[in-house]
Image (tube, rainbow, N blue to C red; front, side, top):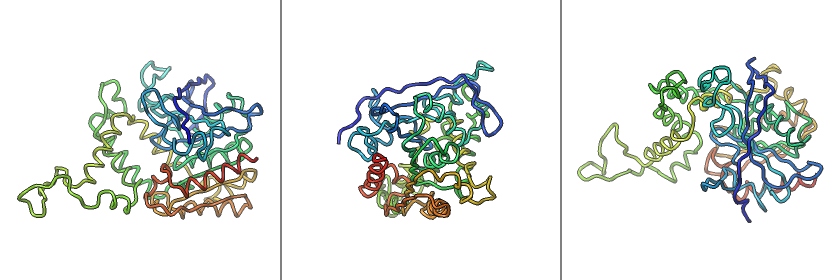
Length: 379
């Protein structure tokens, strides 16, 4: 299989206000995006890829600095989402920190960075923003919308917000809403950020600082939930970071120093994350995760929520060791679709990696995706 090669991000500006579910309005904004492949004359082969929490519009290919797209193993020539057949679009959502208008950008009303004043955004708001860009590209109906985790929630929301604008929905490692436990993890991560002395109520830009300690801890918490116990055990076990002489069993007997390799790994991941991600963006995106609940407006009845999605076909994929978005949550979605006699395929992949499995190159998972996109290509 060949690669897409060098890609260049694009930007699209929108002067028309975007009304948000909160009642606020994003008056003037820009979306960063990338496209791969060639759009057919009838625009029938477009596929939108929705990104998860810490990803972006850079789905596939390589930037000039060597950065590889986060789903490059899935998207490209000859890959399951084949760019020789499909025109693939990746869009960075508003509120992000990777090129689209977000908290670090200037608020036209004040001339200062938005910071904490950036309006709260939801999954539905992101989908509405994406729909505008897709329409600007001359695409009236997408062949498919696909996403994993939070991206899967966006794919589901497309079928409810714009049911006639897509033919297929592919939702991977996702859920119809967050459990109380998931909301709790998000809240602990947010508290780590907002209690960092360098956060300054979200307006840290004016102080020339970054709440890196809070971001580091937030990422460490999140990263634990992305991995399975088996994956962590196989990779790190109880291995010590540094064996020392004199201590019983090689232990240094410290309550503050790094003792175990898993500690070192988490600190490394957290430190790296704190150097490129925006703290206000983290708060916005995790809150959007919390708010997503399509059944809420239907008395908690998920089947009623999906009653309007009868014109779409669905692929739902889950992974056995994903305890953050467990297979049981995907089966809730499948049941709601079946209750509406909607065409749905379901795959539950026995993979050891936990939630992160949706980003990895598992041959069974990729086989399912390839077979489904073959079906999409056949119309």
